[in-house]
Image (cartoon, rainbow, N blue to C red; front, side, top):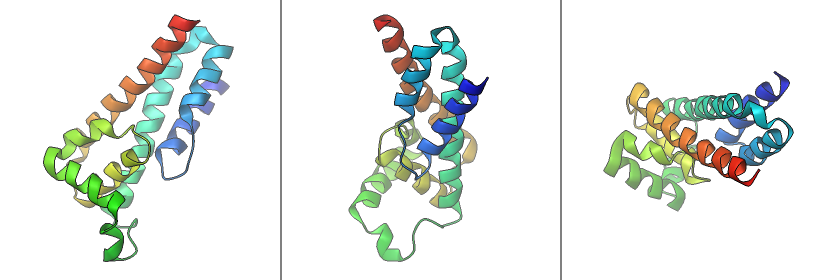
Length: 140
């Protein structure tokens, strides 16, 4: 149970604007308890998705940009182009380092619908963690 809470909280924090490597944590926990792979996969996916939703709500509240010039920065412009072109479907990429957090923030800022946005985040993050678990199990 401790491993699941650790995985959940590590994945949650990694999805916020705080730096963190939940993938390394997942592999370490799988190494210690490979029989819990499914529970760890669920904890990682749900935790990371809830962390992304917290970023969504920060964007929704407009708390991430201090000035209008912040939105003009290159990192936000790339994410903005993706969201404007693909809508909430762009959130399938929310698992990507750096750009994923920005996509979630911008989705909230643009007030994209929360339900489809959450589903896209969950799908993308679950696929990422599933690939990590599969690679580990094949190598193990």
